[in-house]
Structures are given as C-alpha cells and as structure tokens.
Length: 573
Image (tube, rainbow, N blue to C red; front, side):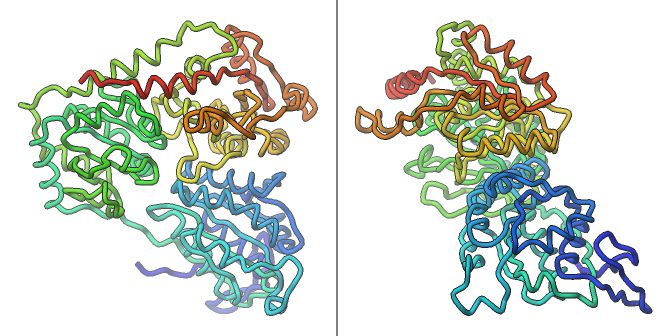
C-alpha cells in the first residue's frame, strides 16, 4: 500500500504555513510538526509532566486540539496511556522529560508492552551537541527503552519526523499491540522544518487464515470427545466476543477465560466456566484434566503459562490467533489457524460437526464454581471476606461498568470471583503485573467512557503508590470510586511467605487515615464499618460528581484457607 503525503493546511494551529506551487513550505519547528502528526493520528490526549527538555512540545500542544493532561507522576501518565490503549485499540500517548522523568515512565510502558496495549511514549532529551560527553541527566534512553518496547528511536533529522510518527503508531497498534518510544533531543525539537507534511494512514486489511487450516481444525474438533476452549485477550482485541459465544454454543464446548479474557463470553452463559490463571489448583483445573483437546483462541502464553495446564505437553492444541503460536514445550499446536479470529471461528463453525458427541463433562465444573461463588452472598462476618466484598461489588456494577484491578492479594480474588458480561469491563495488569495501575487506569477509563461507572479496586499498598493521581482525576473531572482492600500489609507476599515458610516477614506497614486523606484533596471519603454498609456505600460513592475513596477492612485469613482447600480439591468429573 502506497503511503501518500498529506500537506499541512495553510493555516495551522501550531504555526503559519505558506503555499508555494504544489509544495507546502511551512515555518514549523520539529515539535510543532510532531504535534501535527499526532493530530493526524487522531490523538485525543497526551498524559505527562512538563520538563525543561520538552518545553517546545508543550508549547506546541498548547495550541493543539489535543488535550494535555498534567499528571502528578510519570508512571501515572504511562498507566493512563496504557489503559486508554487497551480500551480503545488506539495508541495512548504519554510524555516525559529526560533522565528521571523517562525512567519513571518505563514501568507503565513495560506494562503496556507485555499486556498488548498500544502506547506511544515520547521523551525529551538533551541536545545532540551534549550526547558525546558526560552531561546533566543524560541517559541513553533508546538503549534503555529497547527491552520494554516493540520499537524505539530518536529523532535526529527533523524531516524524518512524519515517517517516525507514522511508523510508531502503525507498530504500536498492529497485532500484537504494544509500546513504542520516541526520543526527542531539545535542539532538534526547536529546529525549523521547511518542507513539513504528515502521512496518510495506510489501510491495514485483515489477514485471513487458509481453508486448509479451517478444515484441519474443524475435523479435529469434530473428533474430540471433551474439547475445551481457552480464550485470551487477543479475542477481545479482535472483537470476536459475539462469534466466539456463538461458536461455543453451537458446538457445545465449554469456555475458560484468562484474567485478561474476562467477558469475552457472558459469565451467565451455561458453558462459561469462568477464569483460569491462579497458581493454586482450582475447580477449573479439573476441566483441563478432563479435556482431550484445547482450543486456544486469542490466547497469549504470558497470560497463563501452558506449563500450568499442560505440563507434559500431552493435551492436543488448536491455536486460533492473529499470529503464529509462541514456542513452548508445553504449547505445541496440532493445528494453527492464523488470521482474523472472528472469521476463523465462523469458518471452523461451518465445517465442524459435534451432533453425535457426548455432553461436555466439564459442565460439572460450572456447577462447582457457581456454588463456590454463591456461598458468600449472605456472609455478614466483618472484616469482610474478599469473596463477599467482590460478590457485592458485582451486584452494584452494571454489565457495561468498568473495574480496574490493581496488583496484590485482591487481584487473585478479583480474577477468581469478579465475572463479566462484556469484554473490557474488568481490566487486570497480568503480563507485567505492575502495582499502582488502578487509579491512573480508572482515570483513563472514565475519559474513554464517561457514561459508565468506574471503580479502581486496589490494596492499601497499591493505593499509596499512585494515590496522587486522584488530584489529577479531580482536576480533569473524572469521577470514579477507589475501593481499598485494607489489611495494612503486602497481603499477597504474606500469602506466599505463609505457604512457603509458614511465617511472614517485612510485609507490615501503617496507613494514613484514607477518609481524611480523600477529604483533604477535595474528594469524598468513606469507611465501611460493617458488611451491610458496603453496598449502600458503593452506591452513594458512585453517585458523586467527584472522585470518591472507600476504605474497606478485609479479612485475608481467607488466603490461606483457599490454599488449603485447593490442595485438598478432588475433581468430580
């Protein structure tokens, strides 16, 4: 596909332009041209912090249609761009200055890259005239960002800017999506570009799998007696939820989702076995033990290692995805169907015949997981058990409402017990598992979907890592609720220590008064004093027009009880 240049209009928001024959001669700086290219890509927001080395970019953004959101920490900016990219499929953009600003940005960039969220990170840098000597705050950022990005580069020739920006967005958004990085030296940002232009977006047509792979997959599925579908985030990115639900229903094959595949099939569907991914043995493990074929749809090995569910590599696998399967001794597909996921499922469905096959034995697993879930519906013990806390949260949230889970012990319970009707309504950092994502992520979710209710679910440890972004949320007008699982400890690490050593160490801390902290920032603060308080408190907090914080004591004795129960679990199927 030919990429054609588009001339920047004669009157621009970032600088004047003069028409000269058929060619546009622009009096633009490189920074202004970067912003023109970002506008051309449809960028709505840039999240970041101001700094000396990105002053020219900030000045250009001041006159742009793009909204610059000043955050309180670069990590928060990157997490916002991360979640924006995951929810929209368009690259979120974050900006920092050089040195410590750039290193602060890296955690969120790495998270986006491993979780398959499109993101473009832009960093300021010292001038090219200072890079050959030891210089204040100078680090080789291209070398630093290389391990955590799909691609990264430095702009050293202003005229190359349109190609660099276009390539960055194309690579960030192409399957598998991820992060890219562009480093902008301050002297390059200030330079004039005489022949400024932007590039048209080249059409990226879907790639379709071969008829041969459809036929092979359909034949294999038709012969299997107890197949099981394992669905991951790739199916959500491919907008394949509807066709996957039809596929499972028509062929009567149970479905298990990864942490990042929640909602790809409604959790109320009779074939939905809910979530796999815990390190502990769980009811869903029984479904894998019974299966004689795994149909992996949009599944990325980083979501849940195949060594956990296919340790000996003996279960036959059909891989359905937009990319070939990754190499792993426990994941060697019998059939690979590589192309548009929705199209592949539809074509296989036409060809497969399971009319004479036995009913799926794994349906018993659904009965077990539903019974386990419902056990806590009327539990009134306090502090609240995590199962009950999540059960009540699910009752309050609508099918389209969004929860963003931080990382910690609560993440394990959210993964296990928070179930979804729709894709992208429960977002969990899984590949990189970065603490601190929930609050900035919730801000981004509210920007993308202002009509939906949004809850950031976090532990007290994760809350204190990026709680400063609540001020950002108040300032930009994104009211959401932060629900804190408060145990005054790094609960997940305590859980691991107790399982491994029978004792814990170095995990306890004290907290500020979260209600007073919220109120001091101009937010609403609540403290749950009894289990019966939780639902009315959530409802009241969600009705506020400013961000709200709910401090909720949690009983994490359930962690070890779950570990004990999982060790004693016997499969019924």
